[in-house]
Image 1 (tube, rainbow, N blue to C red):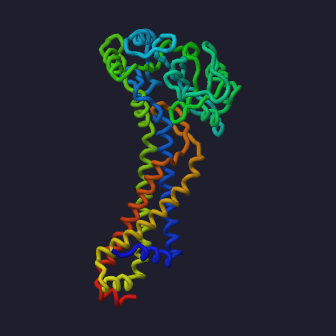
Image 2: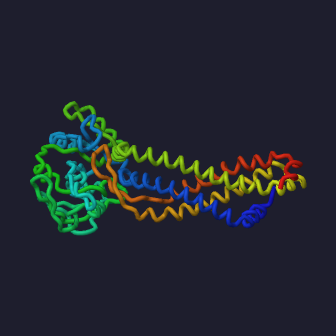
Image 3: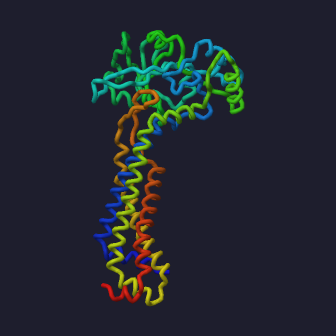
Length: 386
């Protein structure tokens, strides 16, 4: 086997060329990781914290809460079913929720965008303990007070603590700011379910969130709801529901896939170009190695290792260059709910590892063709070429 120091010495000898190759690959990987970070941020903002154990109850056929309808009679029937967890007062942990879209002016667009407003009770916080206040106080039941997600406060007008905004004939008073990391609720406004229902003339809920005692209870409650012809409701896990909501973000998924494919192809071509240049200037050297006893596969392996190492360094550089995108906060439209989803670009460990793997793969592929070409060259012909 050819010693690794041979590869290191060659990279040093072509210092500027090696650096430009690493830098070029780093730029390509950084762009690709930025696009993957966009998708990763959107994905985390819609589904990550959703529970596989909690049950979502919606109208049969409803694709989103905004188009669902659960009567108060159905709520009373379901909360009486056995197998539901109890709170400290011995009451069933069922959260009736009303979901409506409010159009609110954005800080960078006075025309505004839809924001999900969720009417809840205290059970919503008991079932979702990761939703927590960061400023101000909780809204009072039976009032027009609301609490606003931190990301919505940062992007929309009149949504800061102490502000008042108007939607319809009603004035809404912001009394608190909350955070719900890695969940769709980080792009919502919450208030009292009964008051919001009265203000918007809605006499039913959009969905119910149910906390079963265990998986067996989950299946039992699901079967009971399905078999009750009075209800006409569908049941799925909260995690499944929010995972399905990402179909409204299909455009972003397609964009990320296309850009990623182009970037991988660019990385392969960049590495291939570098290795062809490296091989063409070393044909005599490689032929000499063949002449003194090194086999073709050994030379091929050495060249592939060299190109893979260059790509690995480019991948590491790409990760470093992509890290600043974590500071970017933006939003997009979820076409399932026709509302804004606020999110941060997120280059996490999984995304970084993906970048390294793709960089090395592109380096190996890009180096293999010129390396194979050099290894197949007859010794006599290579020795004549300088």
